[in-house]
Length: 239
Image (cartoon, rainbow, N blue to C red; front, side, top):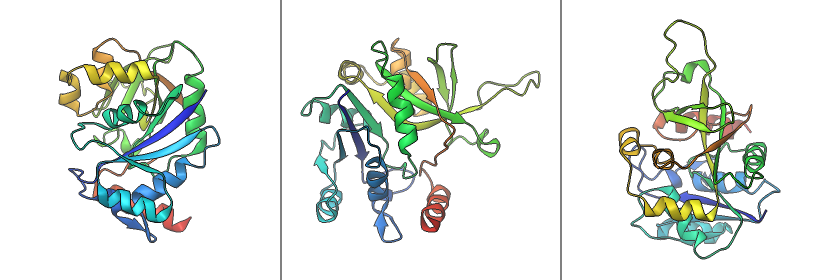
């Protein structure tokens, strides 16, 4: 499969403003993500998709491949779709710009899902650390026997009513799409559950588009709030 990775990098994030340009050991967060994704040998290309001239200029100076996209996009998936309109590929991988700990093994697991021609959308889950089970910033996912997603939520799912100690899975912010799935996504209005949870992947599920999950033992930390940034900075600095 010809696979292109796209890293959506919006400058004006709500919970942690300008996080894409916040530096760790002299390198902006967007650069950590870009270089981590480039370590995968399974990708034909890696593109940082932004709506910021400031981010674009920094990428040019550092030698990171970047492309300007519309400032009107409401989600990272819409930004990936714009790239898909100009660059042909079999599969488009979306690595969120706040995932600097992404690993080649996670990308490899994701692409194994997409080897099934019936899979239009794929993503990744990992066993949820106990301390994050009740954290709304850690998105949980439950899946069917065939690996298809039943639901994603910031809430603790499944609810352990009878204290059966179920396995909890955390959703990681990397996706794979076929072009047809991206075209369908942008043609649909923002869905009710998507608006409620602020999780764009729910637009697929609400409209009957299956999402298949790969499991990986490797956790990650998405940088959503200041505490996340401090944890990630500590890990990357020690490396």
